[in-house]
Length: 145
Image (cartoon, rainbow, N blue to C red; front, side):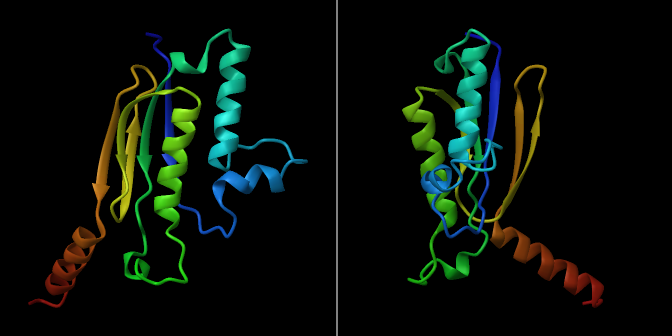
């Protein structure tokens, strides 16, 4: 197994264009990796240019946290987080990449530390419920209750 690692963050952008359609719209612009399909294309190009195959790499996926769970049941709102998680998993599978670790979905945000030397990743996930509880406790302390 190669000692090469890829850390892919499943960023939840508020976009009206699905991730899989982004490249079709931007086809005359250079790849910048802003969208998952472009980032994957850049990775594959670099792997091949360096004499390696994409399936020799390890993938660790993190993110896709739902930031607006109150809108979960609104039929007019797209679940961007779930769409991004699905797209990232599909891209990894389509390109035969080895998924070694994942922490995907739920609510809230994540803080990630990625060690380039050995590929270790540390994740701190802060779900929305915990953030709300922390905010209430802080407000109570501030108010002297």
